[in-house]
Length: 114
Image (cartoon, rainbow, N blue to C red; front, top):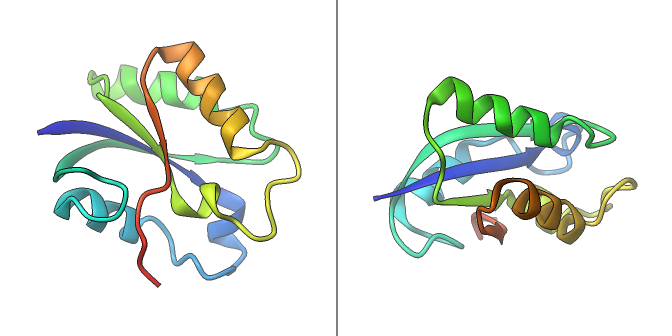
């Protein structure tokens, strides 16, 4: 079973743009739906907080505290497809930063639930 890290947009979830929070991401990961090729185990969920400077240190801390390195990190659907988009980073830029810092592949999106 793949170990999965999740990164979600804290501002998007808190602002009521249609994302009720991480439960949809957890569900898709557990069932292997949406952008997950198979069921997996979520080892951490980190919220990106504006302007995004804490995402790398928070992922590092999450891996340290959980004592697990994920096989893959998914940028939540609210980050990958947010409308309006992030004024600080394009999701692809943030994904590249994560891949560069940790050597872990990043997948854009989690679920396709409405």
